[in-house]
Length: 138
Image 1 (cartoon, rainbow, N blue to C red):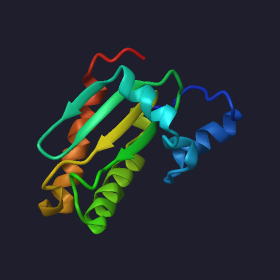
Image 2: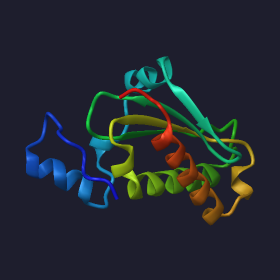
Image 3: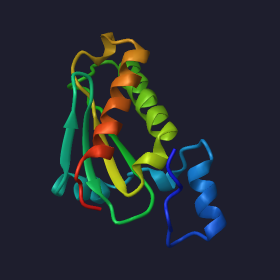
């Protein structure tokens, strides 16, 4: 496991370590506004495998942030979309220390509803490893 990210401007040192060490997913680790999503899509690198597509861009922050863009066109039923988002959030939460300094947008793919949770989770983890070994400039 890597060391926690160096510094977050808005928080004190103790709060920074707590934010990344705790196994939660607070609002500060989420992409929420359309501008934040546009920032990622403007100049990003795409990581994809059979099950997931991740759009990744360095964010010049010392925290990772996650955005979810799972559309009705890809997964028609709300139950399917919600399940995929839960799996993505959980995988991100477990590996957030490895993703410091990146904004990540998760896109849904057709047919994901038929894949079991274990396969989707391991597939997501594979993409996290690809992000870590890539030459993205932070």
